Image (cartoon, rainbow, N blue to C red; front, side, top):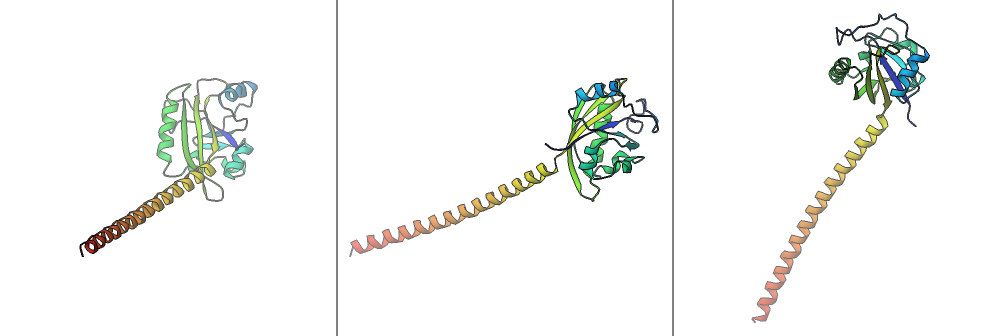
Length: 196
């Protein structure tokens, strides 16, 4: 089973100024009410808590997926980990979710691994800001990098197969044209021999 992690974005001030935001040093509730509110909505039991302006540690799954020791997330912008090409879409989705309590949207992005590579991640962001036990946007996600690699390899194989089929079809068409020419020449030769 693939590793999964959960992100909780607790400060949306940079994305949605009207959304009440917890200060960066506000404690993350580790209460039964918090987990009872979050766990039924997202299937992964592991979590790390991310604020838009910084990240708080909390999940071995996140460490496994992205390779950073949990303490390296503290005080860093969540967007630091997002591929520059994916940042505008992530910001757009966060704004969309922040303005609609209870709404969940699917997200796919590349996140930087500690080794410098980009990991393909897919997840679901759920607005639980109105839930007093959570007060956050929760992102349940998983690493789909290997699936993306297999999809790319399959796409390349299909393209190679299509090229080979096109080449073979062209070769067969040329051979058929040559056979037709040879048959025509034979028929012409036989016709001329029968008149003699």
